[in-house]
Picture 1: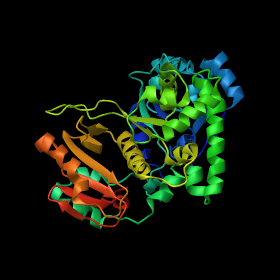
Picture 2 (picture 1 turned 180 degrees about the vertical axis):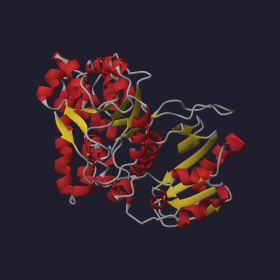
Picture 3 (picture 1 turned 30 degrees about the vertical axis):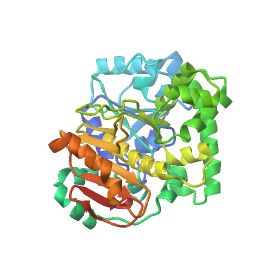
Length: 411
């Protein structure tokens, strides 16, 4: 083991939430896709010295399998990195906590959602708090350590939204450039050219297929799995249809179902649930498919020019990072009726609903707000004003109940 001391790095959105949880809980588990910055966060943004061990080190992995008690025992706080490589280690952590329940004793990180892994029988219920580290938001990449202005919009009156966004710090940017670089720290911050990023993304996908995936399940048909990944990336923003996906890549529906679950467990795939409260309309209940990082999605799909679905994906990524870093509960979904009315994103927080439509166009029209207004009619006083994010520069009330805003003023 080695001792980790803090060094400077860009602040991350979850830092406050992490500090609060370490102050209260014996264990905090930070999960997220590989290369989102979990190890850096654990090493550089946690006060005080901690004993550090990573299961990427084969000697440490062997110790975790043969003698986990020696790895988790002893005095002082500990950080254990990539714990998904030996799920049985969590049982030793549980026993250590039961012997000595000290706040902040264990900081665990993993490149998979441990609660969704079949191999994990110990959830550390009552002993651990879970946090998700998503790829960097646009404002994290800019050094602000935050997500978009969601908290400000929720806290303000609807009629004050225009002033909130007009006075907030915001810098125009081409959303296509953000989609291409994605949110993983290395390609987003350190690789300037698309060719360099393509090399990085290719290595990332190969590492996932050839090593990380094997920690979750034994997959021998890696070319088939990669074809499924590409097919999924070509369906961003679409309803999940496992039968169609299977037909397109010549795989049985049961295999598609299992492999999509693995991608979701790895935080590469995001299945956005439908907003489930049914009033007078018959609602579509199937989830919609998005990706955890637009840069990887574009690389896998072999697409050079991002489309409107990638802008939707960017807004969703920002919302997921915001949601998972806040203490108060918030839900993110979409709304779609059998008649074809659809709202891209719905935030449910504080007993209210905030509907969001995302348009890549630079000149939104009143017709673009039709589904937002239908949603507001359906849910009445529970629904807040509609927010239409777009690729232009106009910030104005398109209708009395729909504010149009450039995406970069919010994200």
